[in-house]
Length: 166
Image (cartoon, rainbow, N blue to C red; front, side):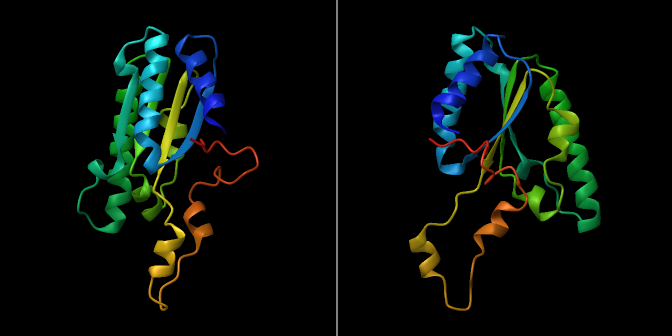
């Protein structure tokens, strides 16, 4: 999805013209541009700044045994999402540092179960993909499968992918 398409969607949501629920992805290095765009949409829609919320998954983690981490992290995410959603609709949520969702195989189900509803938009900030130079700098004994990085987020890579191209 290109930037102007995304901006059209965010503007229409902020103006209450469009209903529905939306899930997008953006690469980590574009996070500042994303936040500026979302703030501008809220301003044009005359909505308060608290309609843009950030949720850093790493900040919810606790050092626990693996079997307890999944339950505790899922519970904390659910609580945060319900609290965020109570601030009003339409709303934008930017989810950062999602790799713990991958590590503990939680996936994006908490977003679908406890946040995404009519008038909500979530943007997952994906970790940056290593550059070709970085990949070539890895020792011969190490390899990186780029498809493995996409597996936890199957929406990325589809022909109609919601990955925002800045």
